[in-house]
Image (tube, rainbow over all chains, first blue to last red; front, side):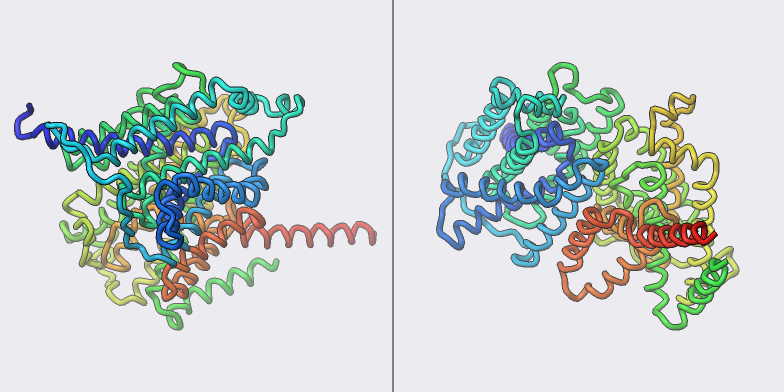
Length: 294
Length: 316
């Protein structure tokens, strides 16, 4: 195909890119939902994702609950943690400058990551894949679990988007984003909606953590490194745009994978370069204007 | 009237300190006093949260180090090189990041800082994961020997005092007034015919330059530069120092830097607890003491003074 680049390498990197993109999409979607309604940049998103992976690992290690159980339990546990965080940390700050809520969630991330590291050390813990094996497609080998990650995350993204765009609940949410006081006057409990939305976004991070446990090593720093990329993704896609976040997430995952093939030295920088270019040429976000933003 | 003895006391303490405390610890504190003050210039006076301030600090550390190693020039030129590169970087980052206002500025600077981190990780002159070793501490102006820690302490002290005086001048100048006005109400300032973006860019450049001076000094104090200096943990730490000490006060970042460096020194043996403690204290500061240590003290003094003058008028 290309000189010196085997199709094998190309497709396997594309797959890795798609996997990474799935996580970028899910995480930046949660971030965008939280930002859209609350104007809070949830700096703890990475830590909450890591928490999801750790809960998954703990469920198996301590209670013997396998992956499929964790897929339901861990997001709920992480969402509950989000609920408490919102009540204790974010609610008192909601009328302050939004920088304070960003810094407060950063502090939460420091505490969570520090405590997990203190307890379990910084080396990664292995989590074996729940769907072993795979299929040889001729041009590449596709492990079942990876296929599951891509399909499942796609499903989650589409379902969330439908929930936001086409259901009554989503309409309430979008309305509350625009004019919370008027929505409140219709008898809707906006503060409770805010709490639940934050918990939902955090739960999504937790769910991504469950998906990630068998793919990456479960380690305390898995979230903070990813977090920075997610920020770049959200900035490129346009803050608060769900569709923008999801599309940019997948797109950048793939671009990153391709960069690994053609110019490996730049692979960990390419997303940031794109962000800088996007800020110069599309300062309002790649997908702004094309779609109603939440 | 009570100010003059207080200042004299501080001067005496600062001069005597290296004879009682390990000078390298003191120099570390001074470097971070400078670094945190540069950060405070942005967040405290311009309302810009730069969540990647370590990129200026760390890059300048490498540039200063490389300049001194390669050219073998005197100390001040090495520092100057670091400051200039950092300031230029500040301007460039500013041009990109001020396109999005408010909270996105924080995210963008955070992401650009990570880009710089990866870039320095791969650049050959930095030594990658190993860092840059054996940075020479050349004589200042070619004549003043600073290889002794105690002697160098006074150089670092002098540089810090000069830079703090510069910051003081900036925030008490008409420019500083406009900067604060932009922080409080940007539309208003714009409607008065000023262009807020330009003022923000100047603030970014100045702040990055001063952070660069701190980074260059750090590289010459420890005679090495590492990737830690560019990492987001350091960016976060400088935010912590500034908020703990008191945002938007001149003495706040200095007090915060002192407390945090001492705290890190004490907690170093407890591993992760140092970061956990930072998180907990930062959270408490944000939730309950947003004015920080110095800000709270000032508030108490004001209240007392107000109470006293009220008593006087009643007495009259």
